[in-house]
Length: 199
Image (cartoon, rainbow, N blue to C red; front, side, top):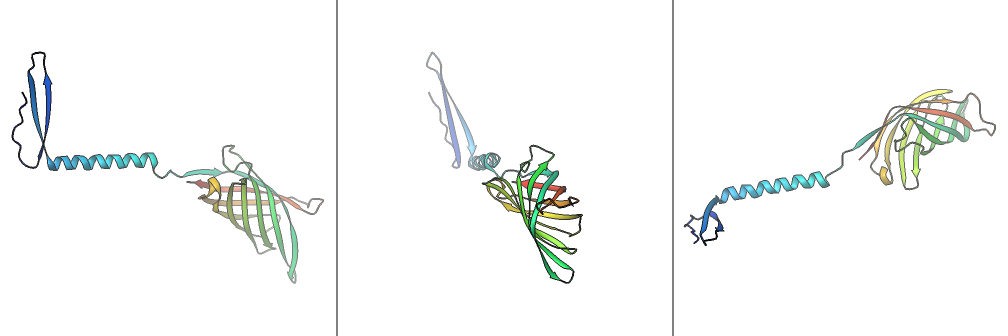
């Protein structure tokens, strides 16, 4: 036989039945205040949202140290813009040779269009091309000293897995002691305090 006692308004009753071979039945009446039940539902919702955040939340950004060099060949045109004043316009093209083989930019082709007002300043942009769908865009600037100098750069975006890339750093560059037979100029840029951040 099941016993259900009268319960006051605002409570919920939970009845459990057990039976034995002789047909005896026992009943228990557990009263849960409505306020406690609401709090329990709220806590369950908070835990569910927390789990959703862990499973599908925003990924943590990862920093990659950029250590190594960009070996390049410069080709362009020198224009005279005044008495003893010259302006070079062209492109530095080459590849990244980084110390960490797991760096996403290791081995990337690098194309850096730029301009150099001799003795004043230089600057331009770069594309670090991993493949046609994954490219990092960079803006750079430097002094215009030769045969060596210093500059800085900033990652300004990209495509594919680099779409929201950021970062930047400094660099030192040096020119080869003599031009190549075809008139181009070889050189090397070493990354310093540089980082690539991917979301």
